[in-house]
Structures are given as structure tokens and as C-alpha cells.
Length: 87
Image 1 (spheres, rainbow, N blue to C red):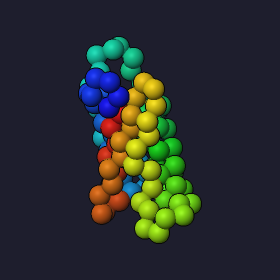
Image 2: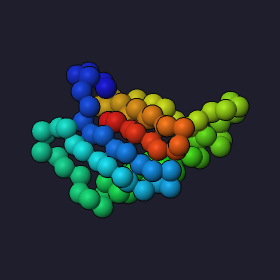
Image 3: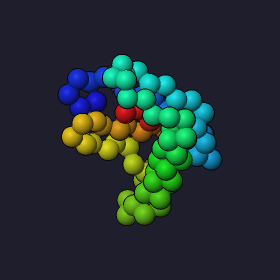
Image 4: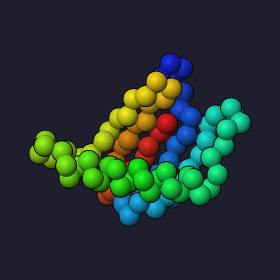
């Protein structure tokens, strides 16, 4: 992750885009409510699937890393379609 190298949040999303597990590791006090967590997982699943289809590279599996000034989002996908993404 950018700067400090710590994981702020971990999400596990099934192959249908449903959130299976989410955990915050940050003590900053800024908690995302349940609805926003579900929405974030669903939107990330959709963006990942669309990017895999639109990529000009054959065999592309979608977005693997998003780098921003304040965080990095890493995505890992299993062969069964389950996605782990860490912020």
C-alpha cells in the first residue's frame, strides 16, 4: 500500500459479485457503513469484469492494481472466481 505499507481493509467477493467477507484494519475511526460496503464490492466486481472484456490483451483477467495518492487497491482472483481485494 502507498506510504505506510499497511492493509486498511480486506474484501472477499464471490464470482457473482456478492460480498462474502469484509474487515477493516484501520483505527482511523472512519468506518464505511454496511450498505456502502456491499455497494463497493458490487461495483468493484463489475469494473473488474468489464475491464477483462475490454482489454486488448488476450487472456487479461481484469484490473489487478489501482494506485491513488492516498491508497493502493490490490485485486487477487482465484481460479474459481473469488476475488480478494485489499485497500
